[in-house]
Image (cartoon, rainbow over the protein chains, first blue to last red):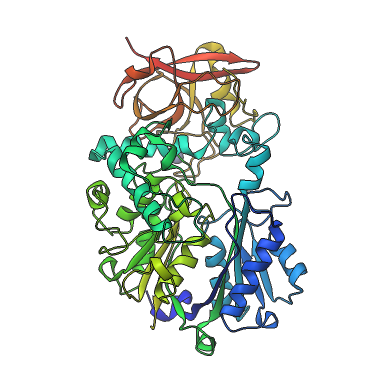
Length: 398
Length: 132
Ligand SMILES: [Zn+2]
């Protein structure tokens, strides 16, 4: 591929921001969003009048759900922004779709500085309605959803039932054991202990993990991410003007957004998901490779997704993630490949997608405080499970 | 066991109602000579619109499964088994269903299963039980 045709290389992350992470938070969804957005703009050394684009995944879909209570329309009005381009929407390559869309808008010359954000208030929602997120409640009456109608009649009530099918198959094909899945949870908890914002910071032992209740075999309570109220924002800038911003620009070296299988949870590769498509696209757009990666923030909505991303991205061999993570030394903060350094979603909180990008940048900039890993210039943020998958290769000083 | 029921369309009604005649109806493309699922108005391989429902044996094997223990709502009978079944007619011809009428500890990957139907209003829900 002609490198000049790879538009994301003309785009850099110049600022990051995040609200408080509450379980729940007393702040409104819009307050959380404003806090994250203004912090990111300030961090980039920009003024709000510099922002001429806004992107969000999934946006508020006209229903203000706790899954995404604030979309671009509302934030533009609230901050009084003047934009050349803005967009949101659920359909796309997973929770990083807002970043990918924003980068495309810059590469297409529509804007210079795009604010990308993601707000979620599922902790507040679950105070009053624990069943609100059940899949059968997504539609009223008969299930008219093109995809969920194949699952809800069988009482697939949460994505965990689908993730569990992948975990069971992974175990069958590769011998992956509970202790190996559990290591993802333990590593996240150990990192969360060093992150003042993390939701769960008290120690978690393998005994705690193995004695936690089964939700959907082989997955247990601690294989599931934790709901929170939070907003995360980043600023994407045209790379040629990013050098004038406050931070060393972090280039979007390569995007992975491919889907070469049906958009389906059961018709795809059960141990590779759409992650294998996104990852192979990403590596085809760069001369860097897995050995260059210094840290990886890998989607852990459920622990098995992190294992599958490790393999899909070539950070370990196919089927070898269990052995790779066992004992935790390779993926620890001081290991060869630190992962989910802020505690991930399993312990840090389900900021859902953009939190991984925020943390990847914090690590690259050396601003992660007590949880800072070794100095490095190349990081991965990857997000999504099942047919949702997107990945970013982020490089400082390139 | 309470269940959310699917909306019926011209594309999907055969799958959900074939059980009225005791048949599992899966969409088939005569141009590719291949089945596909879920049903749709065109073949996902060749875009032929000559597709339509065709009865299959209802025999298959479990590709993966999970035993759900979570009480997502008060009307669920837990535990229950969610599984991906691959039908004997064609490698990779999969659908998601429940494994019923057997103790959960008997379920395993590779187990041979066959379709059975449970009626809810105008839906004959395809479920699977262990072949004996
Ligand atoms: Zn065909």
